[in-house]
Image (cartoon, rainbow, N blue to C red):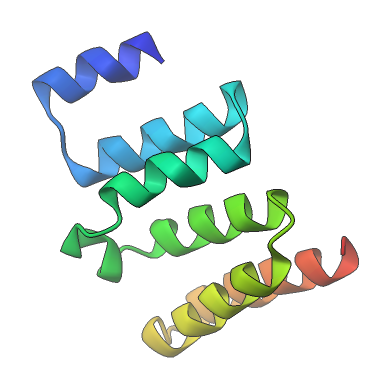
Length: 100
C-alpha cells in the first residue's frame, strides 16, 4: 500500500486510485475497499472505464452483495457492447451464479 500512496503523491490519476483500491481489498477486506471506492466513484473517468465495473462488481460479490454486483454488470453490458466486453461480463456473471 505504501508504494501506491507514493505513486498517488506523484500522479493521483483515477486509474492509480482504482488500482490502489484493489490492492486494499487484498490486504484488508472487500467491504473496506468498497468504502475506499466510494471516495473516488464520482470521477467521470470511471463511467467509461470498463475495469471499474468489473473491479467494483467483484468487490460487491466478495462482500456478499451479489444482486448489486449483477446489476452493475448488467449496466456495463448496456454501455460496453463490443463482443469481447460482452464475453467477459457474461463469464463473470456465470462465475458469480456458480458461487452464490
